[in-house]
Image (cartoon, rainbow, N blue to C red):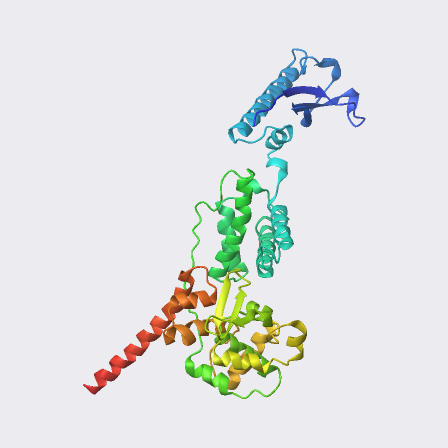
Length: 408
């Protein structure tokens, strides 16, 4: 955007008692559209050898020539700064020109306040456009970014203009080597950070995306699931009437519905409706992706649900099941695994994997139906579970080949 008026003058500041013999500081004033900004030249001069009209030192001595040459150079830099704003299709302002001269991005912007503003906006939209888990991820990423800047630059923040490929690659190194974060989780944090960086690019505060040459890569994870026999062990194991019994029931409920912890935690009785087949279905939205999920309830899930119909907590809070905190659930699941003689590292999310593989895909449920029930946005996500089923088929067929070879 072009300015409608532009002015540039050099002048001597008012007398400063700290300066000897009436000397004054030489200042530059840039005025754009009536808005002035003063910039110190870091030079001093005596008013008796100064032309107010010309805005230059008077005389023929060497010190006069040196000062005037410096002011001429500064004038050229001011016009270069003005031209760079025009070429970048940015508004020409006195503040913008001053920031360029002082080597700052416009308004001296740094990355952490931009990140903070972004997270505050997400917080204000929780329940409308975002889930609490989304805010939690960005808050964790903000903390990591702040800690990395302190580690790498011994600073509390960094100017946006200093974000480059080196920053990104070192950030990746720090997350993996210093914080000991896995590769895939590191990629997720960097993807969160990239969103903040792209905001800076879109707003004209950063000329180029520092992620331009950075390649995001995801490594395949071996997604474990309980086998049919392991599921039976958990179902058959008597846990009494205490906390382990609650955890066992809720875990099995998710093994037969595919619900993630956050989804079963918030699941209300009103979200159990009559389905197209006349049976009971879960109709909910995934907290992680806000995508709809409709799941017909299998007999085991129905039995568990009916067991807690009269539970006080469920009645008072309109909740389907008395779900504990995720940390406690996972802690008690380790006890359950030991009691059942299961060697796998059982976490609550293992229930979702078990539903996708052992309960549905292995028993011939089409992958499209499994994807819908899991609330996946993309069927490629569901195909990761299909690979596990294929691996199991391969192993079973390999054992069959060995048996057939023995019989020859």
